[in-house]
Length: 113
Length: 110
Image 1 (cartoon, rainbow over the protein chains, first blue to last red):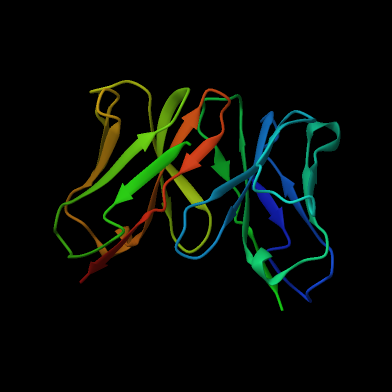
Image 2 (cartoon, rainbow over the protein chains, first blue to last red):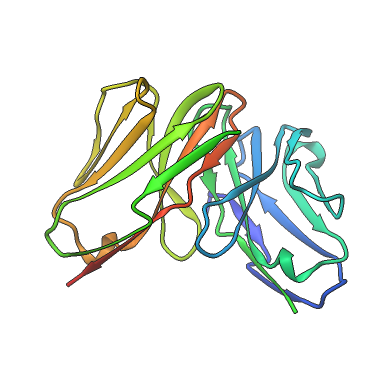
């Protein structure tokens, strides 16, 4: 499978715990995006990378969220001190360069109890 | 503030019907408009539109962009139950960042 891969697919955590998600983009893609989607809404932009550089971070993203893309390959998204409002589907997408279509992974569904 | 608005938010039709989904946008530094289909999980890519007035087709689906009036439509002819999904419209800015609409939920009844 050469598509975008995300792990884990599902995560249930207690409020206050830290969680980390991983995204492996399509291998030659240099752009990587993170989005969050709640029920009944379209995906909401969180952050994106070009290679290893984080170029933009949503102002809606609190300082509990951090993302990395070491070596410009896979990326991780960490949420510290999770809150119930963090429950959502976290989607990763990659593209070859800007302005080409972005391909999405299957997402990680986070439930904070 | 960048905004993408889709209408209707939901739609119920019967197999064989034709549907038109709408997407209007107000986005600075527009580069392209994309349509995705989402069935329970990840959005899957349908079309990318960059030029006004040029229709893109794939089977029973077609889409067109009007950059003067800032909207796009997605048409599905002879709908099938397998077309039931959420259809997402997104505008790509010059940075590649996608701004999504809230989606149109389509239900096709047998």
